[in-house]
Amino acid sequence: MTNPITTSTESLPLDASQQQLGRLAAGWGIVGFSLLLGEALYKVTPYVVELFQKPLSPMLWVALIGWTLFMAYSEGYRGFQKHYSPRFAARARWLRDNPSTKRAILAPLFCMCFFGTTRKRKIVAYCLTGGIFVLVTIIRVTPQPWRGIVDVGVIVGLGWGLLSVLWFCWQTLVLDRDVADPEVVID
Image (tube, rainbow, N blue to C red; front, side, top):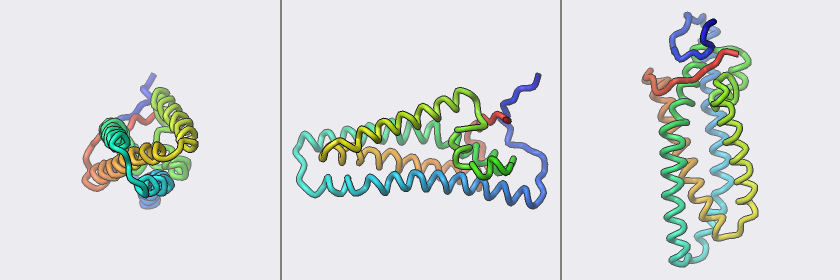
């Protein structure tokens, strides 16, 4: 029995239409994901602006700085830069080199590991999405200044994440560097 996981970025030569589909799919995956994060950043920005309309006490400054550093490290650096972003970029590259109509249409979801990957990666993707949904629901009812403080950390973490995704996509798609295992499972 053959192993359904492919870690190779090598593929059969593509004809011109397949190459175009692959480039469009990879581009759509990156743009779709960027729009998703960009929308989240846009939606929380007013709460951050509101936070700074009034002076903050020293205790709130400590909370703000501590939370922001925590989110920069845990979400931005450890979550995105060290794990998520390299895999996302590797999957965008794999998609470019192995296009299909289904994966092209659903490219952002493919790059985010919602399908076409190992069971473990799918579980992580769905659990992370569910957890984020629960946290967003809780934060929506949190009053200022705490909501603004949380949202400053969110902006730092998601901003770092978006930049790291774009950086790794540049490295793998433009500079042709292997940055991670795409962990693709052929459905």
